[in-house]
Image 1 (cartoon, helix red, strand yellow):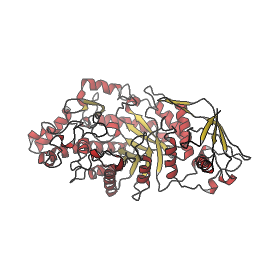
Image 2 (cartoon, rainbow, N blue to C red):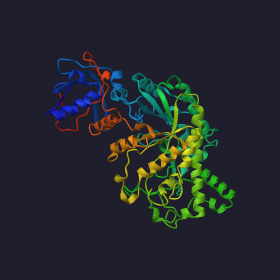
Image 3 (cartoon, rainbow, N blue to C red):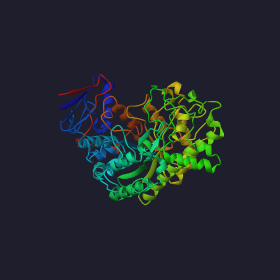
Image 4 (cartoon, rainbow, N blue to C red):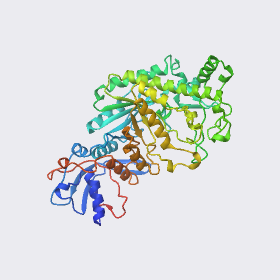
Length: 541
Protein backbone atom coordinates (compact mmCIF):
# COMPACT_ATOMS: atom_id res chain seq x y z
CA UNK A 1 0.00 0.00 0.00
CA UNK A 2 1.07 3.62 -0.44
CA UNK A 3 0.93 6.15 2.36
CA UNK A 4 1.01 9.89 1.72
CA UNK A 5 1.51 12.51 4.40
CA UNK A 6 -0.07 15.74 3.21
CA UNK A 7 0.31 19.09 4.93
CA UNK A 8 -1.93 22.03 4.16
CA UNK A 9 0.03 24.76 5.94
CA UNK A 10 3.60 25.73 6.61
CA UNK A 11 3.15 24.90 10.31
CA UNK A 12 1.97 21.36 9.45
CA UNK A 13 4.79 20.87 6.97
CA UNK A 14 7.16 22.05 9.69
CA UNK A 15 5.87 19.43 12.10
CA UNK A 16 6.10 16.74 9.45
CA UNK A 17 9.60 17.92 8.53
CA UNK A 18 10.70 17.65 12.18
CA UNK A 19 9.31 14.11 12.52
CA UNK A 20 10.74 12.87 9.24
CA UNK A 21 14.08 14.53 9.80
CA UNK A 22 14.30 12.59 13.06
CA UNK A 23 13.70 9.36 11.15
CA UNK A 24 16.15 10.26 8.40
CA UNK A 25 13.68 11.14 5.62
CA UNK A 26 14.46 14.85 5.47
CA UNK A 27 17.70 16.55 4.50
CA UNK A 28 18.06 20.24 5.45
CA UNK A 29 21.19 20.42 3.30
CA UNK A 30 19.09 19.52 0.26
CA UNK A 31 16.50 22.23 1.00
CA UNK A 32 13.86 19.97 2.54
CA UNK A 33 11.04 18.25 0.71
CA UNK A 34 7.83 19.18 -1.05
CA UNK A 35 4.36 19.23 0.45
CA UNK A 36 3.80 15.53 -0.34
CA UNK A 37 6.01 12.75 0.97
CA UNK A 38 5.09 9.25 -0.16
CA UNK A 39 6.16 6.11 1.66
CA UNK A 40 5.33 2.67 0.28
CA UNK A 41 4.62 -0.31 2.53
CA UNK A 42 3.68 -3.91 1.95
CA UNK A 43 1.29 -6.15 3.91
CA UNK A 44 3.77 -8.79 5.08
CA UNK A 45 3.88 -7.82 8.75
CA UNK A 46 1.04 -6.95 11.07
CA UNK A 47 0.99 -6.62 14.83
CA UNK A 48 -2.31 -7.96 16.08
CA UNK A 49 -2.82 -7.23 19.75
CA UNK A 50 -6.03 -6.13 21.44
CA UNK A 51 -7.63 -5.46 18.07
CA UNK A 52 -4.85 -3.15 16.91
CA UNK A 53 -3.38 -3.81 13.47
CA UNK A 54 0.10 -2.41 13.04
CA UNK A 55 1.63 -2.41 9.56
CA UNK A 56 5.41 -2.41 9.46
CA UNK A 57 8.03 -3.49 6.90
CA UNK A 58 8.58 -0.35 4.84
CA UNK A 59 10.16 -1.53 1.59
CA UNK A 60 10.49 1.74 -0.26
CA UNK A 61 10.53 5.40 0.64
CA UNK A 62 10.81 8.31 -1.71
CA UNK A 63 10.64 12.06 -1.25
CA UNK A 64 8.86 13.74 -4.16
CA UNK A 65 11.39 16.28 -5.34
CA UNK A 66 14.24 16.29 -7.80
CA UNK A 67 16.76 14.89 -5.31
CA UNK A 68 16.50 11.57 -3.47
CA UNK A 69 17.42 11.29 0.20
CA UNK A 70 18.70 8.17 1.88
CA UNK A 71 20.45 6.65 4.85
CA UNK A 72 20.77 3.31 6.58
CA UNK A 73 19.88 2.30 10.10
CA UNK A 74 23.33 2.87 11.53
CA UNK A 75 23.71 6.34 9.99
CA UNK A 76 20.32 7.51 11.16
CA UNK A 77 20.78 6.19 14.66
CA UNK A 78 23.97 8.19 15.12
CA UNK A 79 22.28 11.52 14.55
CA UNK A 80 21.11 12.12 18.10
CA UNK A 81 23.55 12.63 20.92
CA UNK A 82 22.52 11.90 24.53
CA UNK A 83 22.14 14.83 26.90
CA UNK A 84 23.67 14.59 30.39
CA UNK A 85 24.57 10.96 29.78
CA UNK A 86 20.98 9.67 30.02
CA UNK A 87 20.71 6.51 27.95
CA UNK A 88 17.26 5.44 26.74
CA UNK A 89 16.08 1.83 26.56
CA UNK A 90 12.66 0.37 25.74
CA UNK A 91 11.28 -2.78 27.35
CA UNK A 92 10.44 -5.64 25.00
CA UNK A 93 7.03 -7.34 25.36
CA UNK A 94 6.81 -9.48 28.50
CA UNK A 95 5.78 -12.45 26.37
CA UNK A 96 8.26 -11.94 23.53
CA UNK A 97 9.35 -15.53 24.27
CA UNK A 98 6.39 -17.88 24.54
CA UNK A 99 5.77 -20.60 27.09
CA UNK A 100 7.08 -23.03 24.45
CA UNK A 101 10.32 -21.06 24.07
CA UNK A 102 9.48 -19.67 20.64
CA UNK A 103 9.40 -16.02 19.62
CA UNK A 104 6.05 -14.24 19.53
CA UNK A 105 5.49 -11.74 16.69
CA UNK A 106 9.12 -12.04 15.63
CA UNK A 107 8.81 -10.05 12.40
CA UNK A 108 6.80 -7.29 14.02
CA UNK A 109 9.25 -7.00 16.91
CA UNK A 110 12.15 -6.92 14.46
CA UNK A 111 10.57 -4.02 12.60
CA UNK A 112 9.87 -2.27 15.89
CA UNK A 113 13.54 -2.63 16.83
CA UNK A 114 14.52 -0.99 13.56
CA UNK A 115 12.20 1.91 14.31
CA UNK A 116 13.76 2.36 17.74
CA UNK A 117 17.24 2.22 16.24
CA UNK A 118 16.32 4.89 13.71
CA UNK A 119 15.05 7.13 16.51
CA UNK A 120 18.33 6.90 18.39
CA UNK A 121 17.17 4.66 21.26
CA UNK A 122 20.23 3.03 22.87
CA UNK A 123 18.88 -0.41 23.65
CA UNK A 124 16.07 -2.66 24.86
CA UNK A 125 15.26 -4.58 28.03
CA UNK A 126 14.51 -8.31 27.84
CA UNK A 127 12.58 -10.16 30.59
CA UNK A 128 14.01 -13.67 31.02
CA UNK A 129 11.54 -15.86 32.89
CA UNK A 130 12.58 -18.63 35.27
CA UNK A 131 9.32 -20.41 34.43
CA UNK A 132 10.26 -20.59 30.73
CA UNK A 133 14.01 -21.16 30.76
CA UNK A 134 13.94 -23.83 33.52
CA UNK A 135 10.37 -24.93 33.01
CA UNK A 136 10.34 -28.73 33.10
CA UNK A 137 12.95 -29.82 35.65
CA UNK A 138 15.57 -28.37 37.95
CA UNK A 139 18.80 -27.84 36.06
CA UNK A 140 17.22 -28.45 32.63
CA UNK A 141 17.63 -25.11 30.85
CA UNK A 142 16.35 -24.04 27.46
CA UNK A 143 17.68 -20.63 26.40
CA UNK A 144 16.84 -20.97 22.70
CA UNK A 145 14.12 -18.32 22.56
CA UNK A 146 16.14 -15.78 24.53
CA UNK A 147 19.28 -16.46 22.49
CA UNK A 148 17.28 -15.71 19.35
CA UNK A 149 16.20 -12.37 20.81
CA UNK A 150 19.76 -11.49 21.82
CA UNK A 151 20.99 -12.28 18.32
CA UNK A 152 18.24 -10.14 16.79
CA UNK A 153 19.13 -7.21 19.05
CA UNK A 154 22.84 -7.64 18.30
CA UNK A 155 22.27 -7.58 14.53
CA UNK A 156 20.26 -4.38 14.96
CA UNK A 157 23.18 -2.71 16.70
CA UNK A 158 21.23 -2.10 19.92
CA UNK A 159 22.30 -2.80 23.49
CA UNK A 160 20.48 -5.26 25.72
CA UNK A 161 19.59 -5.14 29.40
CA UNK A 162 18.40 -8.50 30.75
CA UNK A 163 15.93 -8.82 33.65
CA UNK A 164 16.14 -12.20 35.38
CA UNK A 165 12.57 -12.87 36.53
CA UNK A 166 12.19 -15.37 39.37
CA UNK A 167 8.50 -14.54 39.75
CA UNK A 168 5.32 -15.31 37.83
CA UNK A 169 3.00 -12.97 35.93
CA UNK A 170 -0.77 -12.88 35.61
CA UNK A 171 -0.88 -10.71 32.50
CA UNK A 172 0.54 -12.03 30.30
CA UNK A 173 0.29 -15.44 31.88
CA UNK A 174 3.75 -16.68 32.86
CA UNK A 175 3.97 -19.30 35.61
CA UNK A 176 6.75 -20.39 37.91
CA UNK A 177 8.58 -23.52 36.67
CA UNK A 178 6.27 -26.53 36.58
CA UNK A 179 8.41 -28.48 39.01
CA UNK A 180 8.38 -25.58 41.50
CA UNK A 181 4.59 -25.27 41.31
CA UNK A 182 4.28 -29.01 41.90
CA UNK A 183 6.40 -28.70 45.06
CA UNK A 184 4.20 -25.80 46.13
CA UNK A 185 1.06 -27.90 45.85
CA UNK A 186 2.52 -30.24 48.48
CA UNK A 187 4.35 -27.59 50.52
CA UNK A 188 2.30 -24.36 50.25
CA UNK A 189 4.43 -22.72 52.93
CA UNK A 190 7.15 -22.09 50.36
CA UNK A 191 4.90 -19.15 49.38
CA UNK A 192 4.14 -15.91 51.20
CA UNK A 193 0.97 -16.11 53.30
CA UNK A 194 -1.35 -13.46 54.73
CA UNK A 195 -3.28 -13.41 57.99
CA UNK A 196 -6.21 -15.40 56.54
CA UNK A 197 -3.87 -18.14 55.29
CA UNK A 198 -4.10 -17.14 51.63
CA UNK A 199 -0.94 -17.98 49.67
CA UNK A 200 0.69 -15.70 47.13
CA UNK A 201 1.97 -18.17 44.54
CA UNK A 202 3.78 -15.84 42.15
CA UNK A 203 7.13 -15.97 43.94
CA UNK A 204 8.75 -17.92 46.75
CA UNK A 205 8.69 -16.72 50.34
CA UNK A 206 11.95 -15.06 51.30
CA UNK A 207 11.88 -17.19 54.45
CA UNK A 208 12.88 -20.27 52.42
CA UNK A 209 15.95 -18.69 50.82
CA UNK A 210 18.31 -20.98 52.71
CA UNK A 211 16.03 -23.98 53.25
CA UNK A 212 16.39 -27.11 51.03
CA UNK A 213 12.77 -27.00 49.89
CA UNK A 214 13.40 -27.44 46.13
CA UNK A 215 14.18 -31.13 45.74
CA UNK A 216 16.99 -30.91 48.26
CA UNK A 217 18.36 -27.56 47.14
CA UNK A 218 17.77 -24.11 48.56
CA UNK A 219 16.24 -21.38 46.35
CA UNK A 220 19.52 -19.45 46.62
CA UNK A 221 21.37 -22.45 45.18
CA UNK A 222 18.82 -22.82 42.38
CA UNK A 223 19.03 -19.11 41.52
CA UNK A 224 22.82 -19.38 41.52
CA UNK A 225 22.81 -22.30 39.09
CA UNK A 226 20.32 -20.47 36.87
CA UNK A 227 22.60 -17.42 36.72
CA UNK A 228 25.67 -19.54 36.02
CA UNK A 229 23.91 -21.28 33.14
CA UNK A 230 22.76 -17.95 31.76
CA UNK A 231 26.29 -16.52 31.95
CA UNK A 232 27.75 -19.51 30.10
CA UNK A 233 25.05 -19.59 27.42
CA UNK A 234 25.21 -15.86 26.71
CA UNK A 235 28.97 -15.38 27.17
CA UNK A 236 29.54 -14.15 23.59
CA UNK A 237 26.96 -11.37 24.13
CA UNK A 238 28.34 -10.16 27.47
CA UNK A 239 29.77 -6.67 27.42
CA UNK A 240 29.16 -6.13 23.72
CA UNK A 241 25.40 -6.55 23.38
CA UNK A 242 24.38 -7.34 26.97
CA UNK A 243 25.51 -4.41 29.10
CA UNK A 244 23.28 -4.83 32.14
CA UNK A 245 21.55 -7.54 34.19
CA UNK A 246 18.91 -6.94 36.84
CA UNK A 247 18.34 -9.56 39.49
CA UNK A 248 14.75 -10.46 40.34
CA UNK A 249 14.21 -9.71 44.04
CA UNK A 250 10.53 -10.50 44.66
CA UNK A 251 7.02 -9.84 43.34
CA UNK A 252 7.20 -8.26 39.87
CA UNK A 253 10.97 -8.48 40.27
CA UNK A 254 10.93 -5.84 43.02
CA UNK A 255 12.44 -5.88 46.51
CA UNK A 256 9.26 -6.01 48.58
CA UNK A 257 6.65 -8.26 50.13
CA UNK A 258 3.47 -8.94 48.08
CA UNK A 259 1.46 -6.78 50.48
CA UNK A 260 -0.73 -5.12 47.84
CA UNK A 261 -1.42 -8.01 45.46
CA UNK A 262 -5.17 -8.08 46.03
CA UNK A 263 -7.22 -5.92 43.64
CA UNK A 264 -8.52 -2.91 45.53
CA UNK A 265 -12.28 -2.63 45.96
CA UNK A 266 -12.03 1.03 46.86
CA UNK A 267 -11.37 2.38 43.38
CA UNK A 268 -8.59 4.92 43.07
CA UNK A 269 -7.70 5.05 46.76
CA UNK A 270 -5.62 1.98 47.70
CA UNK A 271 -5.67 0.38 51.09
CA UNK A 272 -2.59 -0.01 53.26
CA UNK A 273 -1.98 -3.66 52.35
CA UNK A 274 -1.30 -6.61 54.64
CA UNK A 275 1.76 -7.99 56.36
CA UNK A 276 2.97 -11.22 54.74
CA UNK A 277 4.46 -13.09 57.68
CA UNK A 278 2.12 -16.02 58.22
CA UNK A 279 3.72 -18.94 56.38
CA UNK A 280 5.21 -21.38 58.85
CA UNK A 281 8.80 -20.46 57.97
CA UNK A 282 8.27 -16.73 58.55
CA UNK A 283 6.46 -17.48 61.83
CA UNK A 284 9.35 -19.69 62.91
CA UNK A 285 11.84 -16.86 62.26
CA UNK A 286 9.63 -14.42 64.14
CA UNK A 287 9.34 -16.78 67.09
CA UNK A 288 13.13 -17.25 67.26
CA UNK A 289 13.73 -13.50 67.15
CA UNK A 290 11.15 -12.78 69.85
CA UNK A 291 12.64 -15.39 72.17
CA UNK A 292 16.16 -14.04 71.54
CA UNK A 293 15.04 -10.56 72.60
CA UNK A 294 13.32 -11.82 75.72
CA UNK A 295 9.75 -11.22 74.54
CA UNK A 296 8.44 -14.68 73.51
CA UNK A 297 4.82 -13.51 73.36
CA UNK A 298 5.73 -11.04 70.61
CA UNK A 299 6.61 -13.95 68.35
CA UNK A 300 3.19 -15.59 68.17
CA UNK A 301 2.15 -13.77 64.98
CA UNK A 302 1.90 -10.47 63.21
CA UNK A 303 0.11 -7.40 64.59
CA UNK A 304 -3.44 -8.30 65.59
CA UNK A 305 -4.68 -4.72 65.19
CA UNK A 306 -3.45 -4.08 61.62
CA UNK A 307 -6.04 -3.46 58.83
CA UNK A 308 -6.74 -5.80 55.94
CA UNK A 309 -5.67 -5.10 52.32
CA UNK A 310 -8.27 -2.42 51.59
CA UNK A 311 -8.22 -0.91 55.05
CA UNK A 312 -7.50 2.75 55.67
CA UNK A 313 -4.69 3.73 58.09
CA UNK A 314 -7.11 4.76 60.84
CA UNK A 315 -9.53 1.86 60.40
CA UNK A 316 -7.59 -0.10 63.05
CA UNK A 317 -5.22 0.87 65.80
CA UNK A 318 -1.85 -0.26 64.46
CA UNK A 319 -1.32 2.55 61.91
CA UNK A 320 -3.34 5.19 63.72
CA UNK A 321 -1.82 8.63 63.11
CA UNK A 322 -1.30 9.38 66.80
CA UNK A 323 -0.99 6.70 69.44
CA UNK A 324 -0.91 3.79 67.00
CA UNK A 325 0.78 0.51 67.87
CA UNK A 326 3.50 1.19 65.31
CA UNK A 327 5.01 3.69 67.77
CA UNK A 328 5.11 1.25 70.70
CA UNK A 329 8.09 -0.96 71.64
CA UNK A 330 6.21 -3.94 70.18
CA UNK A 331 5.58 -2.07 66.93
CA UNK A 332 9.26 -1.18 66.62
CA UNK A 333 10.24 -4.79 67.36
CA UNK A 334 7.98 -6.23 64.68
CA UNK A 335 8.59 -3.63 61.98
CA UNK A 336 12.37 -3.82 62.41
CA UNK A 337 12.31 -7.62 62.18
CA UNK A 338 9.96 -7.63 59.19
CA UNK A 339 12.12 -5.11 57.31
CA UNK A 340 15.37 -6.86 58.25
CA UNK A 341 14.14 -10.09 56.67
CA UNK A 342 13.54 -8.26 53.40
CA UNK A 343 16.89 -6.48 53.52
CA UNK A 344 18.73 -9.73 54.23
CA UNK A 345 16.94 -11.38 51.30
CA UNK A 346 17.81 -8.53 48.96
CA UNK A 347 21.43 -8.51 50.08
CA UNK A 348 21.76 -12.25 49.48
CA UNK A 349 20.41 -12.07 45.94
CA UNK A 350 22.42 -8.98 44.98
CA UNK A 351 25.54 -10.64 46.40
CA UNK A 352 24.76 -13.78 44.40
CA UNK A 353 24.43 -11.83 41.15
CA UNK A 354 27.55 -9.76 41.81
CA UNK A 355 29.55 -12.91 42.50
CA UNK A 356 28.35 -14.86 39.46
CA UNK A 357 28.84 -11.98 37.03
CA UNK A 358 31.90 -10.43 38.72
CA UNK A 359 34.15 -11.14 35.72
CA UNK A 360 31.55 -10.16 33.14
CA UNK A 361 31.61 -6.57 31.81
CA UNK A 362 27.98 -5.88 32.76
CA UNK A 363 26.28 -3.66 35.33
CA UNK A 364 24.22 -5.48 37.98
CA UNK A 365 21.05 -3.90 39.31
CA UNK A 366 17.91 -4.57 41.30
CA UNK A 367 14.53 -2.87 41.43
CA UNK A 368 13.12 -1.05 44.46
CA UNK A 369 9.42 -0.08 44.28
CA UNK A 370 8.09 3.42 44.87
CA UNK A 371 5.27 2.66 47.36
CA UNK A 372 3.94 6.19 47.53
CA UNK A 373 0.40 5.80 48.89
CA UNK A 374 -0.08 7.30 52.35
CA UNK A 375 3.42 8.81 52.27
CA UNK A 376 2.13 12.01 53.85
CA UNK A 377 0.94 10.21 56.98
CA UNK A 378 3.24 9.76 59.96
CA UNK A 379 3.37 5.96 59.81
CA UNK A 380 3.65 5.43 56.00
CA UNK A 381 1.56 2.24 56.32
CA UNK A 382 1.81 1.05 52.70
CA UNK A 383 5.59 1.13 52.91
CA UNK A 384 5.56 -0.71 56.24
CA UNK A 385 3.47 -3.62 54.96
CA UNK A 386 5.72 -3.79 51.85
CA UNK A 387 8.76 -4.16 54.12
CA UNK A 388 10.23 -0.65 54.26
CA UNK A 389 10.56 0.63 57.83
CA UNK A 390 10.17 4.22 56.75
CA UNK A 391 8.16 6.58 58.95
CA UNK A 392 8.11 10.24 59.87
CA UNK A 393 10.92 9.55 62.36
CA UNK A 394 12.90 6.85 60.56
CA UNK A 395 14.61 6.72 57.15
CA UNK A 396 13.99 3.24 55.84
CA UNK A 397 15.89 3.61 52.58
CA UNK A 398 19.41 4.27 53.80
CA UNK A 399 19.82 0.61 54.72
CA UNK A 400 18.37 -0.38 51.35
CA UNK A 401 20.93 1.83 49.62
CA UNK A 402 23.65 0.25 51.81
CA UNK A 403 23.09 -3.26 50.41
CA UNK A 404 23.21 -1.94 46.86
CA UNK A 405 26.43 -0.08 47.60
CA UNK A 406 27.97 -3.07 49.38
CA UNK A 407 27.35 -5.27 46.33
CA UNK A 408 28.27 -2.57 43.76
CA UNK A 409 24.78 -2.71 42.25
CA UNK A 410 22.66 -0.05 40.59
CA UNK A 411 19.15 0.65 41.84
CA UNK A 412 16.21 0.68 39.41
CA UNK A 413 13.41 3.05 40.45
CA UNK A 414 10.06 2.84 38.65
CA UNK A 415 7.44 5.57 38.84
CA UNK A 416 9.48 8.30 37.15
CA UNK A 417 6.27 9.35 35.38
CA UNK A 418 4.26 9.90 38.56
CA UNK A 419 3.58 13.39 39.93
CA UNK A 420 1.92 14.50 43.16
CA UNK A 421 -0.61 16.64 41.29
CA UNK A 422 -2.27 13.61 39.71
CA UNK A 423 -2.66 11.47 42.84
CA UNK A 424 -6.01 11.14 44.68
CA UNK A 425 -5.96 13.63 47.53
CA UNK A 426 -7.57 11.10 49.86
CA UNK A 427 -4.58 8.75 49.54
CA UNK A 428 -2.17 11.33 50.99
CA UNK A 429 0.30 10.13 48.38
CA UNK A 430 3.56 11.72 47.25
CA UNK A 431 5.60 9.85 44.64
CA UNK A 432 7.77 12.92 44.14
CA UNK A 433 8.78 13.23 47.79
CA UNK A 434 9.40 9.49 48.07
CA UNK A 435 11.55 9.44 44.93
CA UNK A 436 13.51 12.38 46.30
CA UNK A 437 14.08 10.53 49.58
CA UNK A 438 15.32 7.36 47.86
CA UNK A 439 17.54 9.37 45.51
CA UNK A 440 19.04 11.14 48.50
CA UNK A 441 19.83 7.82 50.20
CA UNK A 442 21.49 6.60 47.00
CA UNK A 443 23.58 9.74 46.67
CA UNK A 444 24.85 9.33 50.24
CA UNK A 445 25.96 5.77 49.48
CA UNK A 446 27.21 6.40 45.95
CA UNK A 447 24.58 4.17 44.35
CA UNK A 448 23.77 4.79 40.70
CA UNK A 449 20.11 4.98 39.71
CA UNK A 450 18.25 3.78 36.62
CA UNK A 451 14.67 4.89 36.05
CA UNK A 452 11.48 3.40 34.66
CA UNK A 453 7.94 4.59 34.07
CA UNK A 454 5.02 3.00 35.91
CA UNK A 455 3.09 1.71 32.88
CA UNK A 456 2.84 2.18 29.13
CA UNK A 457 -0.80 3.28 29.44
CA UNK A 458 0.63 6.48 30.81
CA UNK A 459 0.10 8.44 33.98
CA UNK A 460 -1.44 11.90 33.48
CA UNK A 461 1.35 14.28 32.57
CA UNK A 462 3.71 11.31 32.64
CA UNK A 463 6.05 12.30 29.81
CA UNK A 464 6.64 15.75 31.28
CA UNK A 465 7.34 14.21 34.68
CA UNK A 466 9.82 11.76 33.14
CA UNK A 467 11.69 14.64 31.51
CA UNK A 468 11.67 16.52 34.82
CA UNK A 469 13.19 13.54 36.62
CA UNK A 470 15.78 12.78 33.96
CA UNK A 471 16.90 16.28 33.11
CA UNK A 472 16.59 17.83 36.56
CA UNK A 473 19.41 19.40 38.50
CA UNK A 474 20.21 16.32 40.59
CA UNK A 475 21.29 14.39 37.47
CA UNK A 476 21.44 11.06 39.32
CA UNK A 477 19.63 8.96 36.67
CA UNK A 478 21.95 7.76 33.91
CA UNK A 479 19.66 5.22 32.20
CA UNK A 480 15.91 5.22 31.66
CA UNK A 481 13.91 2.21 30.44
CA UNK A 482 10.51 2.97 28.97
CA UNK A 483 8.00 0.17 29.63
CA UNK A 484 7.05 -1.27 27.25
CA UNK A 485 6.89 -2.19 23.54
CA UNK A 486 3.58 -3.52 22.18
CA UNK A 487 0.50 -2.55 20.22
CA UNK A 488 -0.39 0.47 22.34
CA UNK A 489 3.22 1.64 22.39
CA UNK A 490 3.18 2.08 18.59
CA UNK A 491 -0.39 3.38 18.42
CA UNK A 492 -1.22 6.90 17.14
CA UNK A 493 -2.47 7.76 20.64
CA UNK A 494 0.92 7.02 22.21
CA UNK A 495 3.84 6.84 19.80
CA UNK A 496 4.02 10.58 18.95
CA UNK A 497 4.41 11.38 22.66
CA UNK A 498 7.18 8.83 23.01
CA UNK A 499 8.89 10.28 19.95
CA UNK A 500 8.80 13.68 21.62
CA UNK A 501 10.38 12.17 24.74
CA UNK A 502 13.21 10.75 22.62
CA UNK A 503 13.69 14.14 20.97
CA UNK A 504 13.79 15.93 24.31
CA UNK A 505 16.52 13.59 25.57
CA UNK A 506 18.63 14.21 22.45
CA UNK A 507 20.41 17.26 21.14
CA UNK A 508 17.76 19.49 19.50
CA UNK A 509 19.99 20.09 16.47
CA UNK A 510 21.75 17.43 14.44
CA UNK A 511 25.37 17.91 13.50
CA UNK A 512 25.87 19.02 9.89
CA UNK A 513 28.32 16.25 9.05
CA UNK A 514 25.83 13.67 10.34
CA UNK A 515 23.32 14.64 7.65
CA UNK A 516 22.68 12.18 4.82
CA UNK A 517 24.05 13.28 1.46
CA UNK A 518 21.87 14.00 -1.53
CA UNK A 519 22.62 10.74 -3.36
CA UNK A 520 21.54 8.45 -0.52
CA UNK A 521 18.28 6.53 -0.73
CA UNK A 522 16.00 5.58 2.18
CA UNK A 523 14.63 2.06 2.68
CA UNK A 524 13.80 0.82 6.14
CA UNK A 525 11.15 -0.77 8.34
CA UNK A 526 9.15 1.79 10.30
CA UNK A 527 6.00 1.83 12.39
CA UNK A 528 3.22 3.94 10.97
CA UNK A 529 0.92 6.10 13.03
CA UNK A 530 -1.39 8.95 12.16
CA UNK A 531 -0.58 12.44 13.34
CA UNK A 532 -2.33 13.88 16.35
CA UNK A 533 -2.88 16.99 14.21
CA UNK A 534 -6.14 16.35 12.38
CA UNK A 535 -5.11 18.61 9.54
CA UNK A 536 -1.97 16.56 8.87
CA UNK A 537 -3.50 13.65 7.02
CA UNK A 538 -2.27 10.14 6.24
CA UNK A 539 -3.84 8.80 3.06
CA UNK A 540 -3.76 5.14 2.06
CA UNK A 541 -4.00 4.23 -1.63
